[in-house]
Structure formats: C-alpha cells, structure tokens
Length: 106
Image (cartoon, rainbow, N blue to C red; front, side, top):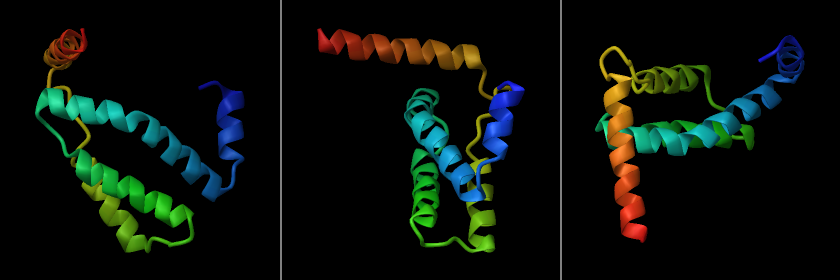
C-alpha cells in the first residue's frame, strides 16, 4: 500500500474503515475455508460468525466493547502459524484438492 492509499484509508470515518476491513475479510474468507479444509486446521464457522457480527454492527446492532474484544480473541486463535503449519505442505495439499475438483468436473 502506498502512502496515498494509506492516507485515503485513514481519512475514512471509523464506520467506513470497519466496512472496508469487513469487505476485505469477506473477500478472503473463501480462501480461509479452503485452507482450513486442506490443512485440516482452523475454524471457518467461528470466523464466519465474527464477520457476521461485524456486518450486524455496521447495520445498526452495535457490538459492546467486551463483545468486540471476545470476537478478536476468538479470531486470533485461528490465524495460521506457518512455523507450525509449513506453507509448502499446505500448498501441496491445495494442489491435490484442486486436481480432485478439476478431475471431477471433467
């Protein structure tokens, strides 16, 4: 991210920054689901619930500060540690999954 992009992002209102972050997370969520399946690790359902809570917050159902802290702690449990889950193994599993899906589609 260059300085101009960063400045534009930081000049957004807090609500718009939350919406931007939620949109980015929404875009990345299918990748996390695939990673979780391939690596047999993580918890997409809890991340989905946290993301849904953020959208609900943006739609006018505010999260309390304690609920926000709880969601952040839950999500942090499911951030992959590549020193524990080597990325090469994950990539290899992902390629096999893609090959299976493509093979079944033909």
